[in-house]
Amino acid sequence: MNFLSLAFVAFVAVSLLIYWHIPRKWRVGFLIFASAAYYGLYSPAFLLHFVTVIALNYLVAVRLHAQPGRALIGVAVALNIAHLAFFKYFNSLFGLLAPQGTLLPDWFKIVMPLAISFYTFQFIAFLVDVYRSATGDAGGKTPAPIAVEPGRFLLFMLFFPHLISGPILRAADFYRQVGSETASRDMQNRGLFLIALGLTKKLFIGDVLGYLINPVFKNPADYGSADALAAMLGYTAQLYCDFSGFIDIARGVAKLFGYDLPQNFNSPYFSTSFSEFWNRWHMTLSKFIRDCIYIPLGGNRVSQARQYFNLMTAMILSGIWHGETLNFLLWGALHGAYLAAEKLLSLSKTPASKPAWLVRNIWVILGWSFSLVFFRAPDFASALTLIGKLFVAKQATLTLSLVFTLIALTWFVQYLELRRDTVLAFSLPRAAFVLPVLLVVIYFLISRVQIPNEAFIYVQF
Image (tube, rainbow, N blue to C red):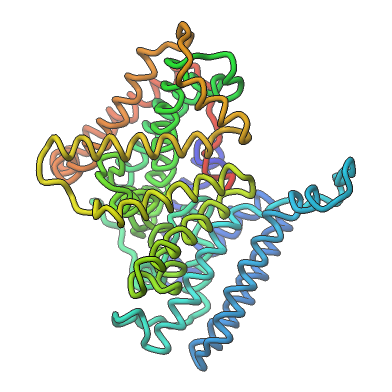
C-alpha cells in the first residue's frame, strides 16, 4: 500500500480512530493486527512467510537470552543472510550458472518478499543486541537490557510505518515506547509537519527532478556535458528528497500513533568528509554497518592496514546488499575507497576555515554524485557512457534552470532541517493555522503539477 495512495490515507485514518478509542491494554495488539493486515494486503502468502521467519527468530532470541553462545549467534546471523541472499540473488545466479541461452521460466522465478532487506537487517540487529545484552559485551559499552517478549517483538518487527524502507529500528530505542504511548497534541502536530515535509520533498522536488532527468539515464548517448552534469547532480537531489521524504512520512505517521522513530537523515549534503556523511545519511543503516560488520571485523582496534580492509569490506557488503550487479559493487567499493583515503590523509575532522569547509563539502558532493551514477544507471555500460558525456560539448536539451532550481531547493530544505528547532518553535504554537494552510497549499500544488508519481526509490531494496 503506497504511502501516496488514498487507500493508505484511509487505512491510517481508520486505524487512528480505532486505536485512540480503545483501552490502552488493547492498543499493542491492535497495532500488531493492523500492521499484519497492512503487509498482508500486499501478499497473504508473504505475510505467512514473514510471520514464520519472525517466529523462528523469536525462538532463537529466547535461547540467546537464556544461554548466549557465539556459535548460536553466528549460525542465526548466517541463516538470516542466506535467507535474504536466496530471494535477492537466486534469479541472477541462475542466469550466470545456466548454459548460454537458457531462460528461467516464469513459474520458477523467485519473487522477493516485500521489505525483506530491511526486516532481515532488523532481525540481525535484534539478535546481536540480545546476545550483547545477555553477555554484557557491547564493544566496551554497557549494553541496554533487552527483554524478549512476544508482544513487543511482534510490534517491533511488524510496525507498519517503518516496515517497507526503514528506518531500521533497534530494540533499545523502540521497546521502551511499547505500551507507554500518549495522545500528545505536540507529538501529533510534529507528526503532521513531518508528513507535510515528506510529501513536499517527494512530490514537488524528487518526482519533478526524476521526470526531468530520467531520459538522460535511459539514453545517455543522446546528451552532452551540461545535461549529463544536470542529471548527475539532479539525481543526487532526487534520491535525498525521495528517500528522506519517505522517512519523514513514516516518522510522521508513527508519531500519530504515539511512537518516535529514529532520525535517519541529518542534512547530509552539508558534510565535509565521507565519515561525517555516513553519520548523516541513512543513519540507521550506517549504525547497523558499524555495529554488525565494521566493529566485529575489528573496527579501529586493529592495524591501520586492517582498518582499510575493514572499511572496504563493510562498504562493499553495503553495495552488494543494494543489488547484485557490478554497478552496486562499484558503488560500495568507491565509498570504501573514499573512507580509506580520508583516514589515510586525516580528513575526518571538520575544517576550521570557511574556504576549507567549502572545498571539502564540494569534494563530498562530487564524490557522492559520481558514485550515484553507478547506483542509478541501469547497467555498467550506461554508467560509463554518462560519465563520458560529461566531457562532450553539446547543446543542452534539459530545462537546466528548473533542474538547478530544484537542486537549490534541496539544499535549502536541508538548511531548514539544520534549523528545525527554530522552525518548529515558530510553527508548533501556530499549528492550528499553519497546518490547514500547509495542507491546502500541498493540495493545490498536487492538482497543478501534472507529474506522474514515481515509486519510492528504496522500496526496491
